[in-house]
Amino acid sequence: MRYLLGDSLLERDGPEAALPELETALKSEPTSPQVRASLGKAYMRSGQAAKAIPLLEAGREADTDGSVHFQLSRALRAAGRAEEAQKALARYESIRREVQAANEERNQQTSVPPP
Image (cartoon, rainbow, N blue to C red; front, side):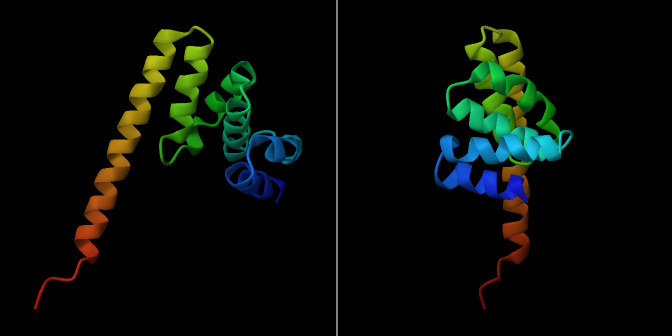
């Protein structure tokens, strides 16, 4: 429950509002990749790349849209780990292509042909 609140606050109000909720959520769900990814994103948005890296790495399996890998790439670059950052960015781009292809296929399947 704290995770959902924290994740919503992150999107709506920013990291300052979300961090306390997400840190509490991590204490109650320490192995949740979703919680870790969201907390990692919050740390990145608050300029704390070093804190974000391990959380984003642990949250990669919950990445359905590429955003975790993108933030991980930014954090790694900020930490001077350019090669790892490039790998994370490549994975982000791959996920984005997969999502785009799936969306296009779904749109084709649901479109109504003209009469």
